[in-house]
Amino acid sequence: MLPPLSALRCFDVAARSENFSIAADKLRLTPSAVSHQIKALETFLGQPLFIRVQRRMQLTDAGRTYAARIETIFQDVEEATKGFLRSSAHVRLMVRVPPSLANSWLVPLLAEFIRRHPNIEIQVLTDGGSSGKPVDCEIRYGQSKWPGVVAESFWTERLFPLVGPDGPKIATLADLAGATLIHTRSRHHGWADLLSAYRLTKDAEKTGIEFDRSVLALEAASSGMGVVLESPLIARRLIESGALFMPLPDVSIEDEAYYFVTGQAGLSKAAALFKEWLLEHIPT
Image (cartoon, rainbow, N blue to C red; front, side, top):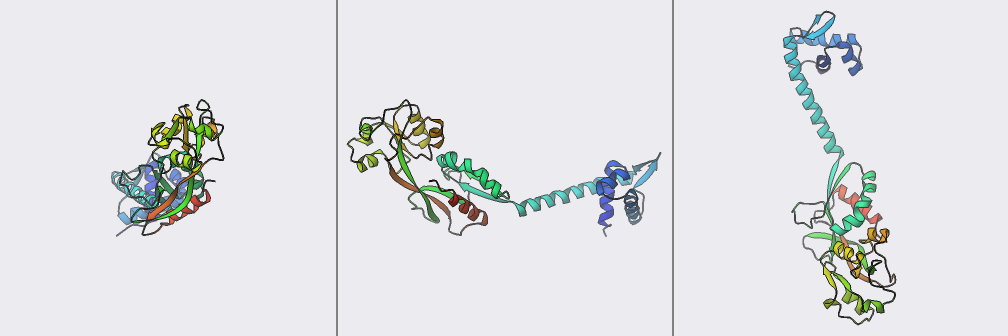
């Protein structure tokens, strides 16, 4: 057997301040309406919850005990409601991205995606899958030969010679033959491919400096250690700061593509929105 919810709510608010006028302001009722609701609750319970002491309302011992239980119940209802609204209004999207692409391109753009889709809580992982955490979608770099997934190419990268102000002087193709070459082993194509494409003679695979990550190779080039063959997109911040520049803008080689990768079960609604946004921002 339950008392009227409206009477319980009035009692809960009035018990916190022990003042019917304050409770009335919070509930947007009149003090007499609050008094009427509490009297109805007292009638239902068969005993007083408040007593008047020197023109002030005070909780009885029974009222104080009852108020503590009712307050806990209302707090539980409030938290349950907030949790329900959060879960129904917000969707979590887990995305895995190569570290270099996330740092140089994706993360600076994410503010726009968040403004456009404020109900999507996006989490970006750059662990390459080592954490084992399942994701809704991925951006992968390579040749799309991955079992058990659906991979759709969305952008093919081109690599250009990049050099720092204190690096080797590169004014023509021929200058590359005498320069210290910086290699990025995580790239599928490298200096040997470019030199061969432009018919330059140099044993590129046995000379120069080698790094396993683009970010390290780019930092080495910006420090004047040599000339690197890398993506201007990945090097965007260093190029904008003047730490690197493109001495031969007409010399480049196509590398592998970036793929939008999902499980075979298909896209969630949030992942589909992310893909749509991603395709709008394909690098040029």
